[in-house]
Every structure is written in C-alpha cells, then in structure tokens.
View 1: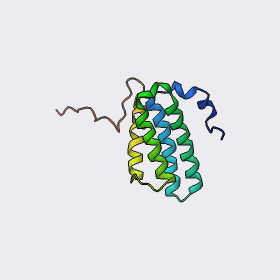
View 2 (view 1 turned 30 degrees about the vertical axis):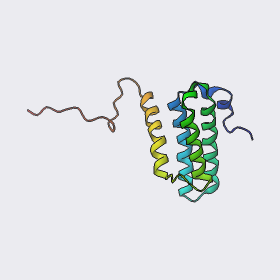
View 3 (view 1 turned 180 degrees about the vertical axis):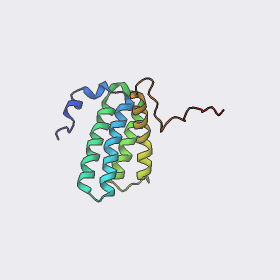
Length: 129
C-alpha cells in the first residue's frame, strides 16, 4: 500500500513534536467522525486510514519509545472504534476530547508572542471613576 503522506513518511514527520503529530492525527480523526456523522462511509474510512498512517509514523518515531504503550493502545482502540465492534466503548466525544487537547496545545504553541486571543483570555480590568 502506498503511503498517503509520502513527504511525511520520507522523514519530515519526525521534525514535528509529539503534540504536533497527535494534533495532525486528530485532524484526520475529526474528518472521519464528521464524514461518518454525514453518512459518508467511504470518506470516513479514507480519513481514518490517513489518521492511522500518521499514527503509525508517530509510533515508528524513535523519540517516542517511552510512549509506545499509550500510542499503540490509541491505535488499537481507534481501529476498533471505526473497523471493529467497539469493544472498548469509545464514543465520538471521547475521540474529540482526546485529540482536541493536542490540537489546542499545538495551536497555542504557534501563537505569536504578545498575541491575545479574546476567546481564551479574560478581558483586562476596567477602571470605573
């Protein structure tokens, strides 16, 4: 089977942090969940296959040897959710929550210094005279 992300499989994937890698996996999982909720099984399957490929690249990254148990369990449970009998009882909400945390962490890491996101930070105090 040909990789769907050949440039990443060629080594570029290892230039990303674990958080960035899992955020990218999560993007594909979110696409798969979205297509599944719209009833498009083919697009959902294609998205989850891309996500599993990225997860396999993460598992193969030698920097993550100490995290193999979690990463391989995520792969097992994700595969079971989409292709098996969901024996672990996963839900769409579980997956959005798990990968969403990585997406948020990756996004916050990329914010420029001094950037203030109004949605994330409280408004500065106002002085009443």
